[in-house]
Length: 137
Image 1 (cartoon, rainbow, N blue to C red):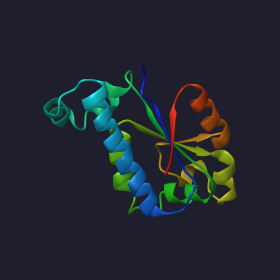
Image 2: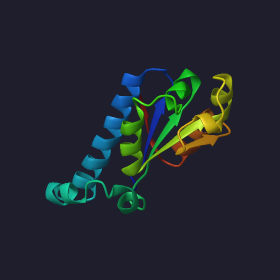
Image 3: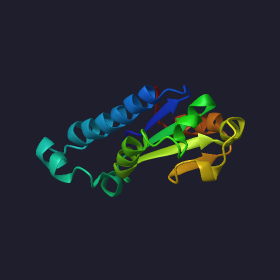
C-alpha cells in the first residue's frame, strides 16, 4: 500500500506554507519509520537523500491555488530556503494555471521547481481518485 499525501494550500500566508512544509517533512519521516520499517537511526543517516529513495514508496504533492500562489513567487526570498529543503526531500509543488494568471504572475516569476498545472481543482480530484490522502493546510 502506498501512503501518498496531497497537501492543499489556498491561503496567502507564509506561516501556513512553513507549517505545510514542516508537516510534509514530518509525514515523510513518520511514514519511513513506521510504515516502511526504517529505523530512526537509518532515517537520520539518510536525511537529505530522500527524494530518490522515497519516490517509489510514496509521494507527497502540494497543490496550491487561489491567492496562495503569490507565496511561490521568486520575490518571496524568505520562504525559498524552506521550500527548497522540502523539494530536496521529495515534495512536489503544483500551482493552478488560472490562479497564477489571476495573481498577475507567469511561470518566469515563480520558483523554478513549481509545476503549473491546467487546473488545481482537477489535480486534487485526480490525486484523490488515485488514493492520495487529502490534507488541508
